[in-house]
Every structure is written in structure tokens, then in C-alpha cells.
Image 1 (cartoon, helix red, strand yellow):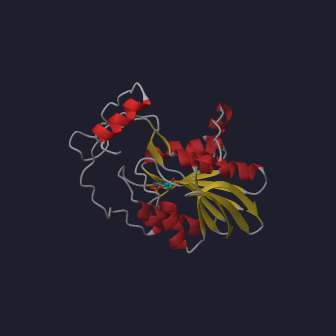
Image 2 (image 1 turned 120 degrees about the vertical axis):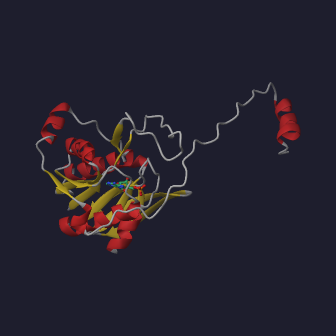
Image 3 (image 1 turned 90 degrees about the vertical axis):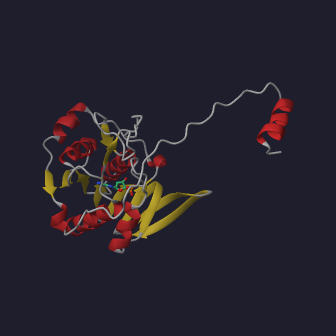
Length: 250
Ligand code: AMP
């Protein structure tokens, strides 16, 4: 089976982001960028499936500025075989445009499974996988915490409200990863060196006939209101008294 893994370059999850003073967006100057953590999980899962003999080739694709090559190289160092950069100007590309481009990549590459992250941690949209499945007319298994390949099928255990659900998808199919699917490995230095020699193709949204002009307008971005400090109570009686008199919840 051939696996396609879309990987997005996002602000590193350790960075404490700052809102621009005019509220027009996030300040990205001198901010560390990395692969979206859910996409690292997707790459790791694809590599494990290949190591187990269930997958034959892993292609990673990123839609973004030339700098997004870094996250493709990281994926290649984890164990993917080949990369595709669909180069765009350094502006946010909305999930629908990303899904349309991915549909074009799927039509060209003909993978059996596309494994995406469940969400990108910059915009937290949680839309691209579902939109891609709809555009392709493929079955989808979102929020996967376990994935096994059987002949002609992918069995996905999904994290849903109140428990786990297992679905069997006829391939070709779309899967999105949840946090507990696996713990991604760190690329080793020899593999980072080897990744530099792996093939990386560059395309443009126009190659897939996709217009990436935004359909949404961001009106304002603001910090969440800061929380008031809490208080420590000395006894249960004091807690009950405060809940009655101050919080008014009893
Ligand atoms: P989202 O719907 O934006 O939360 O993103 C969900 C998933 O779609 C991510 O975890 C990626 O696997 C994929 N994705 C979103 N945007 C991009 C992008 N620009 N390039 C490659 N993959 C992307």
C-alpha cells in the first residue's frame, strides 16, 4: 500500500505565541517553526506500517512557503521516501484550498491511504481530513488511536466522546491521527543526512487548478482574558460558606 502524509509547518508547540499589537494576527517574527505535532504522529504511523511490511512507499506533501521544505526534510528523516512541496506565498491557506490541492496530489500519486493530523495546532481547524474525504468520495476514520491494515481495508479505532469506536474502511481511505496513536521517534543524525538526498519535488497550486485566495476574513485576534488568581480555603466549612456567600452556586 502507498501512503500519502500531508505535513504542515506551524509555530512550534513550545512557543508562547504573541498577538500583534494591532490584533491583525500572531507575531511570527523570529518564532521557531516545526512540523505540526499530529502530522509527526501521522509520519511515524506510516513509517511503522512500512516497517511491519504493510506499506510500500510513503510520500509526504506540504503546502506552504519555500521554508516548509524543512518539515518535509524532517519527515524524510523519520523515514518517509519522497517529498512534494506545493509552494505558496507565505500567507495562511485555508483548509478547503488545502483539501482541494491534496485532492490533486492524490489523483496524481494514487495512494491507498492518506494519513493527516486531526488538526493543525496553529488554526485548530480540524477540517482538512474531513473535507478531503468528502471531495474524493472516500471513507474516513478520524481521531485514530489505533490503525491496522488488512487486505483491502484499514481498521481504525477512533477516540469519540465517551469511549472508543472501531471502524473498518475500504481503501482507498482517509485517516486522521489523535495523540495516543503513537509516540514519534526523534530522527537520528545519519537519517537527517540521508534525508537531504531523498527526492523533493516542487509544485504550485496552479498545477492542480486551485485558487488559494481566502474565503474567510479574520476580523480580530485577541489574547484570552487573563484569569483571576484563586484562593486557598482552610476547611470544608469555609469552602461551603464561600460557595454560598461569594460564588452563589449553592
Ligand atoms: P486543519 O484542518 O487545518 O486543522 O489541519 C488538519 C491536517 O491537515 C493537518 O494535521 C495536516 O495533516 C493537514 N494540513 C493542513 N494544512 C496543511 C498544509 N498547509 N500542508 C500540508 N498539510 C496540511
